[in-house]
Image (cartoon, rainbow, N blue to C red; front, side):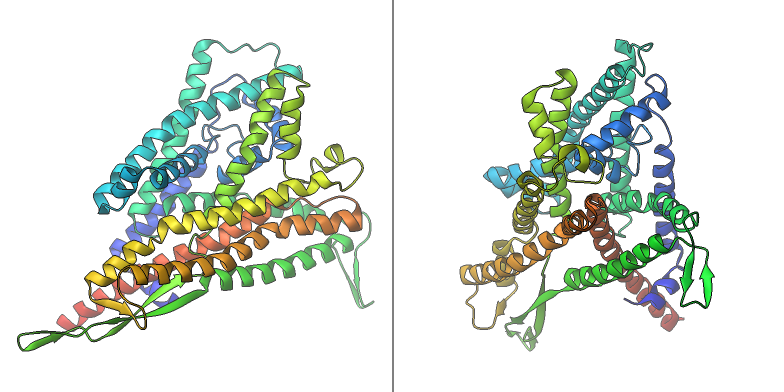
Length: 477
């Protein structure tokens, strides 16, 4: 990365304008998270949300990508989940329907149509999720005798669903505005901002526990005492070191790539010759980035939400209870109630399914963004070839073989990284009898590192273009 060039590029008005627009959108996004849903007393529903977050892993995931919008019962409660779900559905249909696949390969025009259909699908999904969450939250308050004096009317339902749907669509629009600035993917940037926005709360609670010296302070080798809790201090230090190690390997794995040399045939046209040069085709180890983790978490956690709806409508329903029990991630919140006898075989069901889905989505999403047939055809049209491989179908098969091998190691690496929180939980269960509950935090860390690297790379590329233009202008003057 050229950090000196990035800072220099901020002197350019266009670059500074783009950065300020993105920062302004993020600030507006955080302000939206403070606007409550117009449904009765907001504080009443916040209590129901707290209860729901303890029961549903999908709710925790939704709260994560909405920047705490669920916990605060704001109009961005459903967040970007409808858009993510719509993207998954459209991409699956693109692979299943030949006409859609042909349209996706039809350049910018085809991609615009597919993006438009994704936006259209987001609207009904946002409406359905808004109704589902309001229903669950209201039934939770009624069952707990929290809000028996409030009965929502049809106009209350319409206003609340409209506000939440509009909040989700506004987030989608904000993400597209960020993407148009050419500095990273907008949806990923908003999710990144969502996770980062919750760090101050985490740091505040951690600091409160760290500086709580009611049980004594830390004595360093008998020299002096630090006003910190000794137990919490060593735990925080251990996790800080472990996090740095994990981040280091995340960066290395995310940046790892296979370089394929591409030769271009020499062509003679009149007295001029063209080609006869070499280029490279980089293939990343994890070409899909963090998308498989997001897809797997959303896909796997949805049955728990359905189970929560069933048990809310019909308390004691065996099918709904089973869905919640099987598809809820083991955490510090639910371990004591769901596993009263300690670790059982059911504890491993969610991590195993999670690993399998991450593995499968890595292959699936890579096949979408890296079309070997299209790349082989483009190389053949441009007179490019890989040494020792015939152009056309042979090149496509060769690239497919390389990508599949990289996907195998990339999917295993991504799956193991996603498993780290569960492994940590298992160790804490064996040592202390209870997990520490880092499942969503591990996913958040993976998203933060990947998105930060992608956005930094985009900023670096644009900064290089801007500084080259400035350098050319200086030569002209």
